[in-house]
Image 1 (spheres, rainbow, N blue to C red):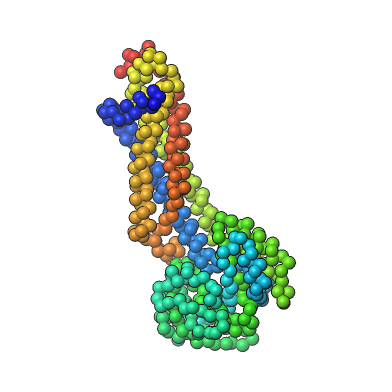
Image 2 (cartoon, rainbow, N blue to C red; image 1 turned 90 degrees about the vertical axis):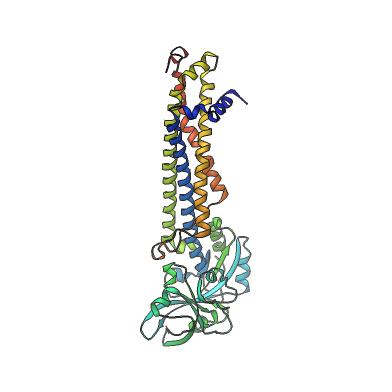
Length: 414
């Protein structure tokens, strides 16, 4: 062990540090480090959890990619695409594609004796992944919808159920408009709630077979294909690869296919989420700045208080670098103690909120009913390493004050 580390440990562990007038400054410095790190852990976990929750809800309704008729993107009348073995093989050949599922949509209206509401009826088949929707079922159950027979069942949102005063087991009249008005009486099999009003207030789910019949489409036709990829971080690359492979692919009707990802289809939502990244960086800079400046003040007070010790060390042959390293190592030990308490506070909040949902939110405003948290080990480790390194780097400049302390004058300092 070298001399600066040995002396720093003796000062840090010995009773001398707690008896000096620098004790309040040292305590304040450690509190500043603890508060700064705790706030950073809490802020990063909450904002990351919020972004992840919103993204999961959007992709839960629309998956990561959608392959549709190009006319639908231009806002023209939607025509179906043919989902056959050739298209399925083309899409599943991409290494990033994890699952492919078809869907059909039809705009309509639900009418009760007292009210009515416009909806989008989304038809799904047995190949559709319903884990996300089943997780949010509040009443009833999510049926196994078919693509060959109509169950005449429907799953609606809690928002629609409240507006139309519907319950599980009720039969509702639905109306669809083409050249003629067509009516279907459907049974409410389940009620879901995701608190995401952009979808809850619009989408209801039923059989793919029923929606295709309403659209006058064949069994192998659909509004589009939803694709789930293995790694969301590679969304842009996957979109480009799938889109490129569809450039020369058309169906029997000459339909031109188009691939769009969930971020391209919901630019407002994901632009809003990007703003949250700016908030994270603002919080990190502020907290590290506060922690660093409190530590600088503490270090200066310690150096001034130990002027005599500095003079003795220099008179015994220690150079300025050795003395600077002594106080920097002492600062590292103090920063480490503050970081320990900061981790205790921050991680306690994280685990309590994650497993109990103690802090709640207004779902009408925040699209969720409790504060979401998400914190990975690499992010937590990076916060700790970054806090330590930046705090020490901020102390390099003030540590040079020891070079101005001369042994001849410091020995008389009280």
